[in-house]
Length: 154
Image (cartoon, rainbow, N blue to C red; front, side, top):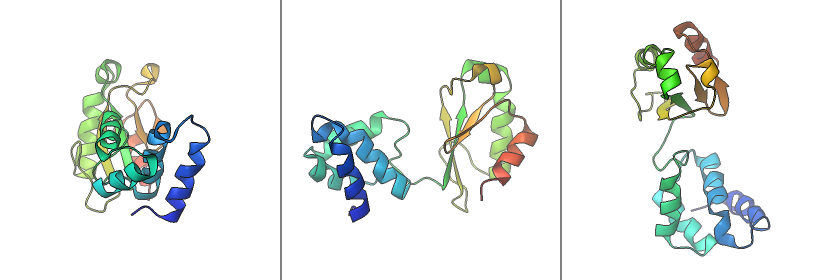
């Protein structure tokens, strides 16, 4: 069940769009901000609020790769696997993250701190390899930089 705060935030989006359904992505982002992911129950709740079917909401949620339909850790690591990053050391970065965190793509650390996912491009090819942790972009990655970065997220 959506909280009063979530409903309020979603309704605040309504005035920015010509009709409720157009606020679907923003509504999904509101739920995810509060819960880290969007459950089937949340999809049903949003359907009623947005006057859409649950299937319509789910089709939007599953289209966008940054709307999470299963639980994720407190911090989501998006590791760029584009050609530029691949050429500049992606494999070394990926192997270091896997060893350090003890997870592979799509998995979450045992302490629920990190989930690691691939992303096709972060738009910083001149500073590859790159990753994002939450909303923070990190470039020119090395194993040493990665250790510093991970240690800063508690």
